[in-house]
Length: 436
RNA sequence: GCCCCGGUAGUGUAGUGGCCUAUCAUGAAGCCCUGUCGAGGCUUCGACUUGGGUUCGAAUCCCAGCCGGGGCGCCA
Image 1 (tube, rainbow, N blue to C red):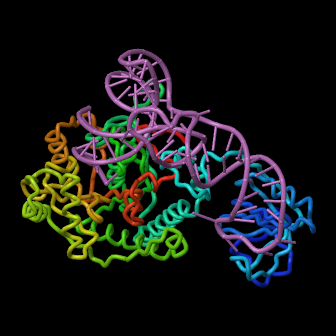
Image 2 (image 1 turned 180 degrees about the horizontal axis):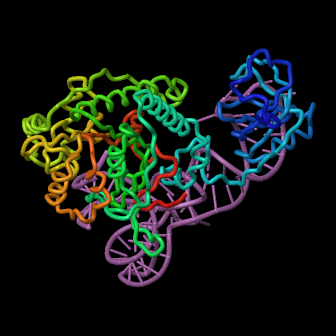
């Protein structure tokens, strides 16, 4: 590692460094100039530290630093001194200063201003916004829970794969897709890796997962939707039924939730506490859900998917029993995609995982018989010839299989109680936002 | 796709027909100050989304455009 600009991060400096020379680097968060003495707060990836500038001792350094715009980038070599008056317990007295970058003024978004900014302004200036510890904490936790997901899935012998995001035709029907020109052909951005991860079940890879991008051209305008989002997609072969899939999903969520609860520094910054849920999660059949909702005077009719209001209501009902996580199982066949395995005449082996009244994952046992699959395609108003490449994977030996898709941003939103899904992705793509 | 709402200095706001030469805070520029940590004090700078209309008079009322936020549907 290059140590020219930095020998220590702010948090790495300890009493054994006192009275010796250190080199620190970061952004100028604030300068408090008292006349003959000034204090400069320098922020790095781990926190902040104070540079103390004495006009009499080092007049050139004093003048140079005191006149620097906030958010400029510095590397400073100086003497580290113990001082109880300073928050960190030490201060750095600069001897040599390298200004690596001078920030323009005024800042379009104050990193430590005493005024709030609109979310839109924050997103317009996302790079500055991401300098705030409470914003950064979300992405440090995101990294941690994804690492936990990798570790858990690999421990269960899942293989990480990557399937194409530029695809030839409609994958599942339903949602609108972004069109693009692929040389002389029309192509689309994948709305999910569904058909590809299923195809892989016919290869012998048996258990796969993908941290996948979903592109959806729906013109929704809500706090819970993105047009570009990410998900953990899992597919597994040789399963007995969807219960095996649900067991993996709940353990995955548990592993991620547990890892998040260990991010104490980030949670402190966000002022959140995380309670790890107990396994197994409650299973509640769709029929049972409809009954419960009707008892609460919901107008829901059997056969349709839950409305946002119904989902919320069910969340409240479960909350009364102290349940945050629950599976809704055995959905009506008609409310699930064509590849969902039927269970009897009207039900399916499809399920959703709900967290506090919000859907964070949905999955199922899939159909592996090509005849039944073709029949279901037609029943859903789709044309088998549009799915020839997909159906081909089923013709030459396809084992029983199932899986799920798990929205990462939705998960984080629930995990950290954030009110807008855009908080959970670095550079959100929504109905109107294409930059930054 | 349907339906609601909003747009005032770099940032966040006050303003409901004349008291607006537009409030306050934050910020920026400058000055004073040797222990600040939301430092303090003083000075200065900087804004009504666009185009029509109503009116003696419009930031304020009406219409249209542009830009944006949100609810529902759909879904992760």
